[in-house]
Length: 150
Length: 128
Image (cartoon, rainbow over the protein chains, first blue to last red):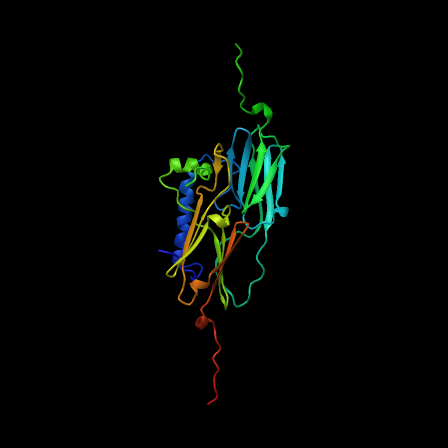
């Protein structure tokens, strides 16, 4: 059963689909310890974070932005992403809108970084609508192999 | 699926019974000439995007490719599936053979024109 392309907002199927999304998100969240700065469902942009031996990598799923206008700041162990996704130009008067689900407007998200993050060397790249922020770990906290002398 | 692509969501696929594709948010606007669908597909490139029309069903599918290394361990994730999928039923008045698509910065724009006979026409009322 698929939603029809030309249905009116607020109809039963639209509401059912929204409910389904909420349920999926709620069940997905159960297995993850939530951060105190975790945003509620549907926050823009969605953020994934991973670590390697050398660095902390943060992926912000922020499609349709001008990379020059994304503000990335690191201060006291907090990474702040902010910017604005422009509201689409005024539509033709005769146009009818069937779905308006995409995020519009200003956004701001804050992520707390692990203590071993070296905030002085942050790199950010924007590709295919995903902002990747790479923060190297401090030299001292990286795993090291120690030679055993005979 | 490529294991590398799945690194961020590896924890999910281990714990969950299945990773349901994400339903991407869309804007759908109809004007006199046709319908424009705009979908957010962050992380999807031209190579990993598939748009299919089967009968009157239009399906969008995309795979997230972040190019991360396999040694990346996920510590926190709001995006829990590397797949996007959403389908729509097109009305008979839409010309599914003329669908055009444009992907930029993770935003897909689809334009589905109306069939010639379905475009609005003004009917002249003749004086009796």
